[in-house]
Image (cartoon, rainbow, N blue to C red; front, side, top):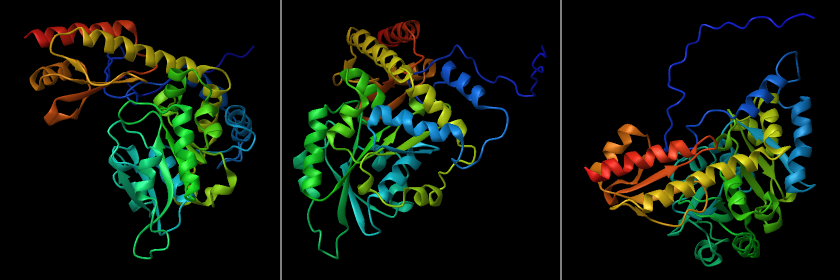
Length: 359
């Protein structure tokens, strides 16, 4: 039997693989099962731009979770997924109602507006969640040519503030939006974490709750790269294939995006990874609450912990374990756990937190 060739590379490791932080689940590496899937898809030639066997099979993988009408379009990243999805449910004069804290409004450098060519109509949502009442605040002026026309709502699951929608809350927002003739988009970068926390299938928070188009997250749950736009109501969107290309989100070697999602969703890897991250966030929050001078600001409903502590202690702690200020003047910080966060990581961070708070 022929032996595989020895693999050599001029690349060198430039980081300590034992060092972990709590800044973002984007900091984590690639899940070993995802790396195995990438190797499985490597070798030989496959058609480019999504005409490969892996992307064809991926449609059935997503339909097993989101229903028989689901149409899946792999893309490179979350901002791209959101821009493509929102373009597909709006006209050039269209607007999207979303919480002021939503990622599409605060963290995408204006891409939905500048690249997508749409208007964001933001509403205040202290817990990060849309409600029917908040939708109604901006769902007006449809025939006013002087105002961008509301055509969609965008909600985030779990939210930028770490909160989660229940299926009933999403259904209420979807029903209100549809009554106004608006499509419903979900930014599901951390949908897996919300579903794992609530103990419900992915469809319960999307297809069954009236969501029309979904940006489904992979990178934050162990993928090397790649997200997916999942069309749940085909009649609600237009031109997905063309918009994906126009928005520079069409991968030439798409098999390497698609096979990652197959590894994530064909079994329970998505759920195992999300449960692990959520459990470590709960452990971190419980430990932080016991530290004098630290306030956990809200219940931990997914994999993020929001806390308040003195500014100088936070700055010292950041030098030992990476994380971000969320609202620096108020002393608010955000700690995020990943699929590979361990109990030892959390306990080491808590030891450092106690030391810095005692100084």
